[in-house]
Length: 218
Image 1 (cartoon, one colour):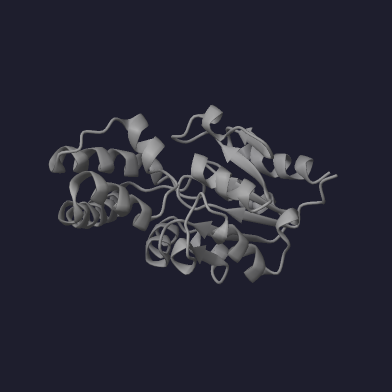
Image 2 (cartoon, helix red, strand yellow; image 1 turned 120 degrees about the vertical axis):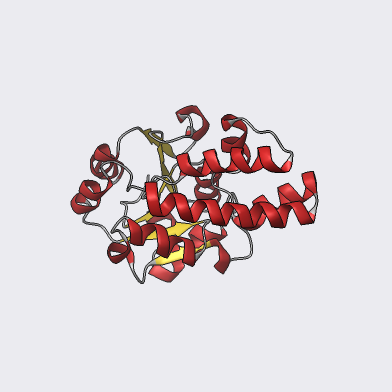
């Protein structure tokens, strides 16, 4: 029998801030520049939810280290401009956060600098300050469980009382590997069927989230 939920762990990109649509567009653009033509589905399948180091390794294998470094720099340049001009919070997330009474934290594949920028631009930083964890703090990024286990341990909770809110296939796999339940947000770029699986409830609107968490904890 499942224990009641005591901690809600949020991914950042695509769950709190609507960065993934921007990121997919940018990765396609850079791929065209550097000689790796990618479709949106290919970018989502290969990159979404992965750490910067994992993505860099994939690009290095395909195009070589020099091109991977250039890809990384172009991504930073274009991503910063897009964040400053286009970024919004995920629709409904502020209302959902207002309604959730359980302790919360953020555990993201992104760096602390990136999250400070995106969460700051959308007014969400203050909601999580001091409770934000990055894949840069652990040995292995998603789909390994390291990041979520680190976040739970730092917050003082056992894995079995945590639920992870994710929008990527690698994120829900990491939650399962950590022994945590997960909620797969299918209102972004990742198809719901990519998120479905053992211990995962798929939902499509952030306005549903408080009720989904309540139901899971009963």
